[in-house]
Image 1 (cartoon, one colour):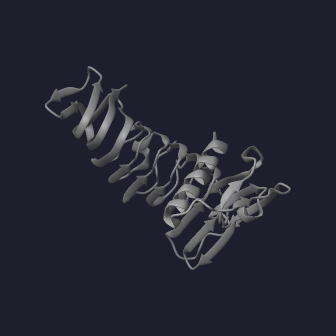
Image 2: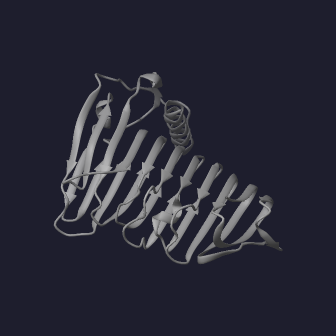
Image 3: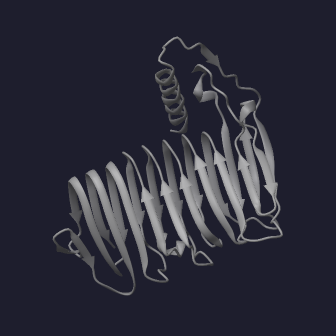
Length: 288
């Protein structure tokens, strides 16, 4: 799937460039692949914490997991396009790991099945503010058991699976996710230990599963265009979902109590307060 995403991103880029230039006479841009290279990534924990970590990833496959030992980030980057060579910048507690610049001046001409760009990274449980910016890619994230103070994810045409397999060790001040025409599935979100979560999507298929160990009352804002959104709340967790939207179809399990545009799930302990605003599409409310 990632190869098709890369192709789509390049096509969109070419069309936008043509539209902005008011001409359709762009040259073909040959992008050559070379031998596959693998570079080891090892970024030490900065003296000052929390570390301000930014991952800028263009296209390909990005895998994140806990488990870095003796380093802030460790792992490998595998690529076969010279411009995908990863770049590391460290300034105090500011850490940036980015995909090399791939300049496109015309319409790309390449066999995308031949392109390789994969990061396999492990993160430390040292306190950090984490920002991930990506384009057309496939992402597989397990951020469980880390110490994330704030999390921000911005991506384009993506296929992403995100989970918090264990409780975030500190309270997450904010959690923001903005995406485009994507398929995003997030699970064990209660383990993120957030106070405020904001999810903004375009036209896509999005699942937000709030399984896990909810530590406190938490606010969630969900905004999307024409899309399929599924919200899952474990049975026994109190939740209130308020819905605003246009041509919106809502399908709720029988456990949800309905009053106008408000859906309530009875439960004990901390409460999820969720506001949903959708232009059109389908919203599913599930409990299990």
